[in-house]
Length: 273
Image 1: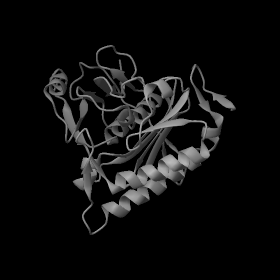
Image 2: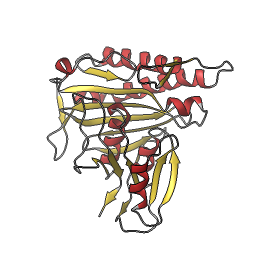
Image 3: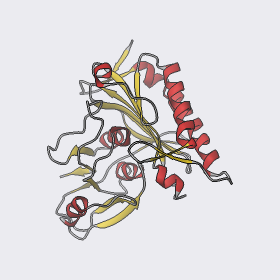
Image 4: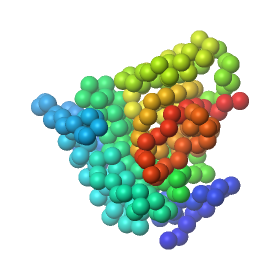
């Protein structure tokens, strides 16, 4: 496999992926159209519940089928982990250098509540760190992506628009803090209360990460656990825009394809000075 070495990094993006990124864009668009066919349907979407009591719909499964089958077809050397597929045990996947992390419908509750704030998240992990990430917003038909060492971008018909995080200090007044519509907890509220007169922005799913990468929000603390596929694409997009997603306790970047696929508490932010 030929490799594209990114600047100033020990992590590398497979050249086949970088050169064929339009394939990823096409898969995300197709999956987004499948999701929207259910979103706009007059009949009510059937809801099932998984073992962890989270909802899953036919829209989740349809998008998952398109994305996973496409990635296996075009990138057969890479293993994958998807929220809606059977996950291999750690003994099988722990030695994989490259592995996809997929959330085919991030924000199923937002989808069901018709807020428009849901996304498709796909990331490529190399040795525990994301080296490529893609977030597609089906309602808005907007695609955001990043490759390690090349920057973060919004894809448009007129060419890519580069994303740049805000720069701020934590003692600054009026920081824009993004919070979840469905998940507020005492520890997260405590972290927000440490800030000076923060301005709260409510967003669903991976739109929170996009808002930070675009410089529209500054800070996103998350003191309850979510899964790896929820954050991996957002992490590389924020990092390549100049920000970070770090373990709230250690200050180190989040890692992936761990034995447990549950994330620690984390803080996503622009560039803190």
